[in-house]
Image (cartoon, rainbow, N blue to C red; front, side, top):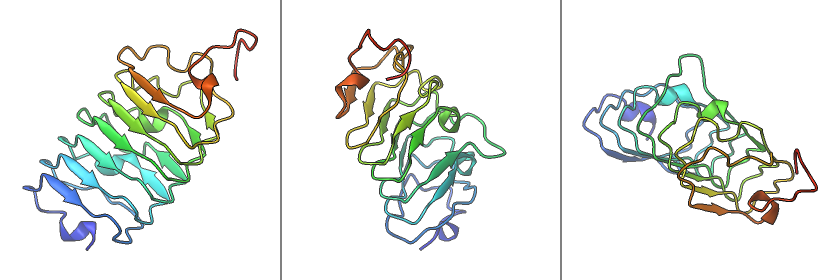
Length: 175
């Protein structure tokens, strides 16, 4: 089964295409879709504009894909409804906000057990409503001191590196 098999089904609310060998995503027109599970496929590059027409999407699972990069894409605009994004067990090595700038309502981000080494200065600047961030199992070595500043609803950060949540006054810039 591929995305083409369901591309015109506007009545879908929940769609699971896990382990289907999907290599590339095209723009989908599933306006009523609320949950999309694309876990354990073969996605290496993800253009977020593929989700442009998923105007009610609340949960997106991309876990287990060999993702190397996430980009905003050419025609990308804000996707107002996404609340949960699962990027766990991917091959992402860095995390920046531009690719996720279209998700201002994001509440939960799971990027555990990936390969993230660097989180950029603007890592969460466009996702200010995050309440839970899971970065466990990542070899994060560099991240800004004020990474979580501006996250007004942040309740939980899961990480293997205590420096991610606890300040060290001896390092005024990056740790």
